Image (cartoon, rainbow, N blue to C red):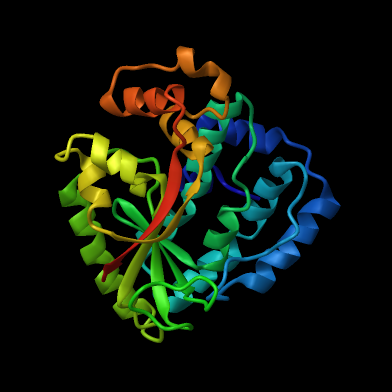
Length: 274
């Protein structure tokens, strides 16, 4: 049974906590995911590939049931409590994003949280860092297949100022050197629409997004991802609503303007020395 304090530490809003407590979960669906989550705790290297419930509210129930297991893994690693809870609080954040997007209680990105519950990703200041191994089919410049790297992720928690990013990276260097000594890290990677060359070339060069993106050296071929730009800017997947989206910032105007001009936003990859 999840306590009120645990809900708070997991980042739940009051509305999501109440809905989670009211939800009548499917015991079979929850147990199936619980079994998989428990088996995956501490497995590093590749993202979990799990059978996920059709109703994402059952996923939330399974994640709540397995909080003790991932918390035990963190404790055995010596990971401080504040970092452990900050990492797992992405559950509450994703619930809030899902509610803003769809208007109801649920977890549209329920697969994403399986990475947290495997112990592969950690929130360190402004950014999140995911341990993974480079593979032959997805090479990263300057690395060898099998080498460990950190994938950078940007939670929706405010601006990405250079000062916050510098502090986060410094914290990550200390964190992984101390708590994951068996995984030597030399490289950071990022796959995001924030590395779309059009974005970097058309926002003001002093903007936080551009300064963040310029930290990474691009590699590989960008892939079309119109939805990423719309979703992360406006929390909507509906391209038919372009005329309804606010146009208050240079980013908002750029995202909508490019689409109206027939352009396509893209995800791109980059790397940086750690």
